[in-house]
Image (cartoon, rainbow, N blue to C red; front, side, top):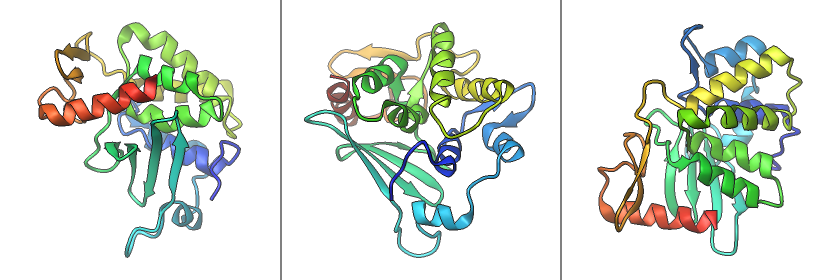
Length: 218
């Protein structure tokens, strides 16, 4: 199965991978908003990507070599997408989601180093990213530009709405300004609970995930 941003179904599937994307004024999540604007992918298309919900998993795994030492994997399951760098688990978008992993700077570094399909890589990694309020303008601008690379024929207002939803996935209102902190001997840790970098995780697990992220950024 070839996954490209020229496939409208795949673009819509990618946009549905952001559980924190919401709009307080509309009292709506992005997954509520999308079906109001677009015809979402049909069951047959989803089954080809994720495998059927019943029985053993038979979904597709996307593989993207980031550099000589690190490969990114995204496993598409019926109710979640699961992410890895090499064999290190990064998180998932399912009911017990674990995201909030990469700083905005780390995401940008990985995408900017890519010479094959940076926009596709951006959309696959974005659910894992965390932003700060001071980065909001830059994040919104990047999301808006990468939306232009998709097969979605968006009107300006639709692009603005999607950008707002997606920016909110990265930046939580009223959150402490330093979402990440550096812990000596371990590396970056975060205050967010749903993260493989949560400051309360055991040291060995934190070191392992930090080492592979640092290798991916290089």
